[in-house]
Length: 414
Ligand code: SF4
Image: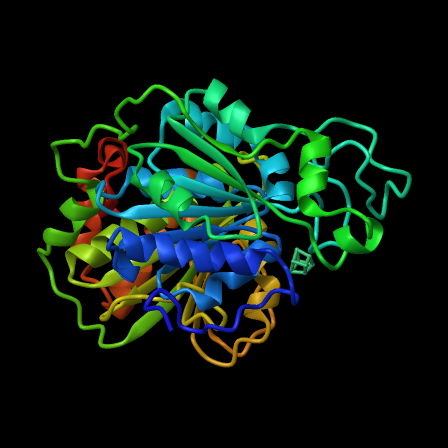
């Protein structure tokens, strides 16, 4: 078995052309001497995407039609010797067509392998924007009435230096190899018929004949060469690097602590939680912070989830929080269902609020009255640190002082 695969048995229907795409991709990668962990395979929804688990490369599985956008972001952050390959179906290419064209226009350093079986295979055989005129699908049993997009032509028009179309079956590893060696954007469209839906609806059609009738010409085309798009790297260290190296305090936390801060939108909840995470990092901990709030960002609840840990955090979900801090009625209403089943941990609650039913220890404090609505979250977190010592309170005060908020709030005085 190739070193690029962890399982050789592929998850596709018997006879599906996608098998060949994987085999040829592997052959092309081997031909250019890549190592599996120098390759990132980005897929999205569709039969093509269920192959992630077979590859020994890095794999990223995205939303339908978004694999090119995801891959573009990945490629922009990687050195040029890495390879970013996109697997996308004709359905995904239709949905994410603008992403494909923009990546081609920008000459982002990715190779897109378009699995064109001319219909949405995974969802039952509906037509896509690449279904050719006359092709019968479950929704167009009399034949599809519209012309298809010609993706290689479109990407070349958008500025891609390389585009190709191959008609499976066959050995097209050399075309993929050429695409992988391009500096910048390349696209290889591989034409096949879905044996489960395409063949069933079009039993008399042979792929080559279908391609000929539809005007799907095989070929390799090149556009003007130009440097691949790479955003300029900033000379200054990133915020993360700055934070990661500036340990000035120490924390007694041994394991992991999960914390929820719930308040109202517009009251600085997210910023307060971010500052707590930064303070924790300045005390030698790992930290993650997630926020949630309604799309109307200035009204309703605002909730932040913070994980602090002595060791790297690979999962930042919080199901059973150790600490919940609630500063407003919006936060309480939003978190009531999480607070109710708590069997341990501590709930810090603003004194203006009714005490909810919970198995947690409840500590009622005056956050809003003391610090005002705008700073209630900050003060609540300071109170939490003063009472637990998980992170030295002075680390939090210092972090706030050094932030843009420092000019507006004197946390030490609270
Ligand atoms: S449904 Fe069609 S496209 Fe999907 S794996 Fe089966 S044959 Fe291939």
